[in-house]
Image 1 (cartoon, helix red, strand yellow):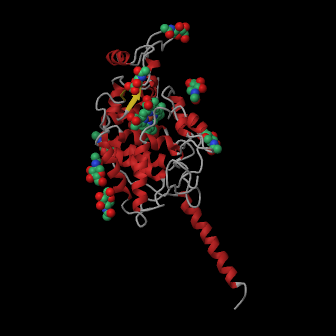
Image 2: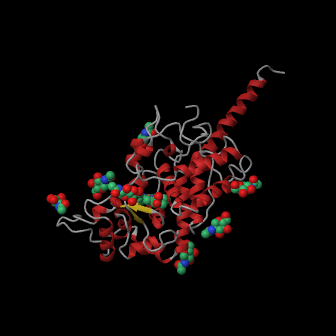
Image 3: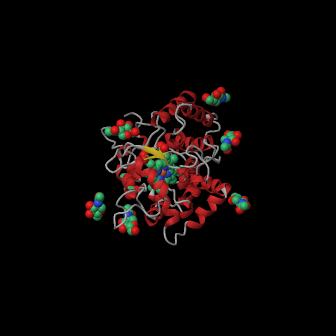
Length: 331
Ligand code: HEM
Ligand SMILES: *[C@@H]1O[C@H](CO)[C@@H](O)[C@H](O)[C@H]1NC(C)=O
Ligand SMILES: *[C@@H]1O[C@H](CO)[C@@H](O)[C@H](O)[C@H]1NC(C)=O
Ligand SMILES: *[C@@H]1O[C@H](CO)[C@@H](O)[C@H](O)[C@H]1NC(C)=O
Ligand SMILES: *[C@@H]1O[C@H](CO)[C@@H](O)[C@H](O)[C@H]1NC(C)=O
Ligand SMILES: *[C@@H]1O[C@H](CO)[C@@H](O)[C@H](O)[C@H]1NC(C)=O
Ligand SMILES: *[C@@H]1O[C@H](CO)[C@@H](O)[C@H](O)[C@H]1NC(C)=O
Ligand SMILES: *[C@@H]1O[C@H](CO)[C@@H](O)[C@H](O)[C@H]1NC(C)=O
């Protein structure tokens, strides 16, 4: 037997391995946990159902966490890390501070999964599953959730401050920020439909209510009766943390009322109304189509959640599976 034969076999195997790892890097899979944690989705669902009994808003809050995670260095659980000696938490960034919520429920999901399948399900995947379960629980569509993401070893607070859109962004700013994530204007319009549930604080829309135009008036795109009620809720120099429903029509139901609200000039955030009211907006036709056809919205929303979930996941040997979503392992 030739002494070089085993080396040959090993190098062939390594080449095959590198090739396979390269391939698996590129894609997530709906069956990723089917042998290692087959009950993962049911466990996530059961914890969220429990929280939902006393907090109907929790499904909205968890859906938002997935968005805020994915837009910062990809869907890698970076949002969930707390401050530590080496981590400056994304929770302190402007879009998240005193606003992002649901972290305690994520902890409960993680504990339940660690009991059932220790060290298997990543925190990044918990957010992907939790957002799908949440949308379903509030009456929205269901889709095949792709899994296999791993968790980051770092956070990026400056990324959270710059990459996540603000409610004051115009349509150009919004499309630019989505495009930077590889997401299209269709993804922007469909995913903004998540504002069909959940709440927003006065400080996120109060600039529209007073001194918005050069002659001191409110945002002219706001319907007069809606403006009056928002001014009562959020007076000048009032409490900026008071909350109201993002969707005034069906506040807790995942449906297409967000888009009919826009048609009635009742979008809450400037960034919402921009999708329809910007002069010559290319997004207006899609808003109108989702307003008139809920199943068209549900189909697009499902696809766009998959697209958002594909933003730069860590796979293979990158990152880790955290045991506590708030901390890097061993820290
Ligand atoms: C298009 C750009 C977006 C902007 C500018 C934006 C901005 C905001 C703001 C300002 C709030 C209120 C936060 C507060 O007052 O505490 C909010 C809430 C929310 N956002 Fe967005 N958002 C955007 C896109 C998205 C996307 C893509 C999703 C998910 C797919 C999403 C899901 C939510 C949900 C569900 C809430 C309510 C959360 C709760 O009640 O806890 N948003 N968003
Ligand atoms: C899966 O998890 C759910 C929720 O915790 C539980 O009710 C059910 O018994 C579990 N099923 C199996 C097969 O472990
Ligand atoms: C939620 O998912 C369950 C199955 O997992 C399905 O039976 C139910 O119809 C879904 N709900 C909605 C509103 O799609
Ligand atoms: C942090 O996020 C910003 C904005 O997305 C990005 O440009 C930067 O490369 C990120 N930094 C690190 C260290 O990942
Ligand atoms: C938003 O767009 C305006 C132009 O319409 C531009 O001046 C501004 O710098 C943009 N802001 C961001 C954060 O991209
Ligand atoms: C409205 O804005 C203008 C220009 O930005 C400023 O001069 C004026 O003091 C503001 N008025 C109020 C009531 O805030
Ligand atoms: C402002 O409103 C929030 C939410 O309703 C409340 O928790 C907080 O105590 C209020 N702050 C003040 C100073 O009234
Ligand atoms: C609504 O959208 C669905 C899904 O895109 C499509 O199959 C259906 O034909 C549309 N219905 C109408 C009335 O346009």
